[in-house]
Image (cartoon, rainbow, N blue to C red; front, side, top):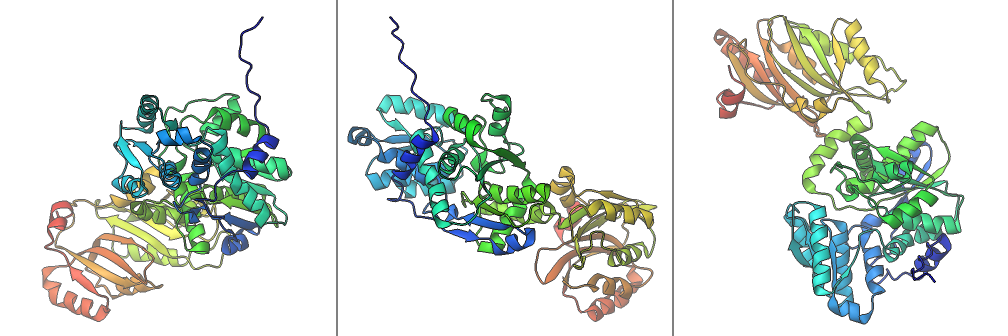
Length: 525
């Protein structure tokens, strides 16, 4: 006679449907809006619906699953308290849920967690314990405290009650949108959100596709499904920290393997562009994980050439670190391929820069776009007597135009390399063009504010005397109505009076920085 304990039956979509319909989430969560992204829909010729989980009290969907788990605990369990390991949205969800239920919550966070997140958890009544340098260290310590104190561990994703709580998002979506819905795009970290959404949709509207979305450097679920077993990634990218999971859950893997229709990976630039798309339509800034679904919809439409279909994207979080916004803004245009980057070689002789600028002004459109082409960035430092290398950014009208522009430059006598998809160039080189120059004699350095309109630079170049030479030039469009430019000019001392008259007649605000210590240390010969 066997003494083995029979293995519990795997929960099916019908079982999860019951759990989702009876989930207790609305003590703390709100029914988030489902809005049409009008601008994005018009641009990609398909209807895009945004499920606004960024509107939750903790700006993330995570409180749904966390609270549902805690709400199903016994009074004895609640008396002993709950514990979790998290450095992000799950931590705030557990803290808020515990406060609502009147139970103690210990949140174990890595010692590297930013203070803003620690304070956010404390403000919600959670007790923060810092342990280890990574999530894995914090997780191990949390399990130790769970056993020591007899507390209940609230898993961020691999728990049926957590999954059911997240599934209420799909329940709301299908109630809010009665019309046709071709696919729902869902970001995946550990898999709790997509497991809940897939279970509900496949139980109620199985014809709707459920498409999982991951970062190309954090695709643990996609790789696990492809290999038929859970795999642990050796490393994950941290740009989308909300989905940076090395090992997905056992239950979430089982559900995803059986119910998710397909998977898409997106890169950092595509996510930055999607953050901007969401902002344009909602005036809200979502975190990278919150924009994954939108980035995937755009990629899906481009690949499948669809028109007239309806897609839903879950904006799963908006806990964006403010200091990331500069990076996001800079990469968004490249991600949308609305900006192209080039390294261009021009002869180091009078008039070369003007000829190159004239060439830019006459560039044809290679994709039929009639949008005006603007210079977004221009970096140059004199370093060679025969030739000069400049780093140039240009607006583009359509995707795939950058290689054709580079070819046009080369045919016109300016050797060019397309750097639009070069990570080193985008991340570092654009900020490092410069340095000392042994050729920059009698150099004066000035900061200008040019009006952000066509012809502003040409006006400057045409007004310059033939004997003056630009030895340094740095410009980056920051979206304002004027451009900030740093320029080095070689002007003979005998021309000082004429140069002063030139600056006065130009009418552009400027500050001379020739004596600035930063210039003298890092740029002056």
